[in-house]
Length: 130
Image (cartoon, rainbow, N blue to C red):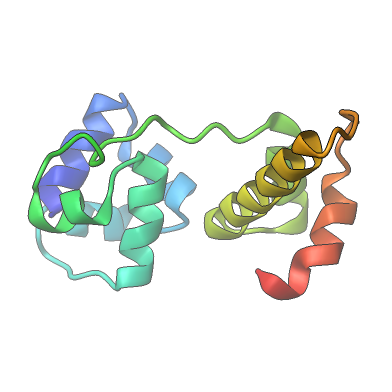
């Protein structure tokens, strides 16, 4: 598993520092993980998989398929800035983005106009679900 994490990180041209920061883990932990010196909790592995854009199946089994490697998730700059200010984890930020996209898709289907999005206000209204 550590080898697959390392290979994907290198495919993305990321340093261990960059991946560790994005996944909310320490560089030392990531280094130990990549070399097989440490195990990992499922929740942390899920965070790493999301950041790397790969499935848990791929990380755990090494079974590549069309669903194994996805495009990197692009977080809007306004959301990234808000998440940093609010101290949100990557998982919370990604969940917030997914919730917003579902609502916008529903509103767009209903004919609502596009508007500037207030991430702070949205976060306050869904905070208890994160």
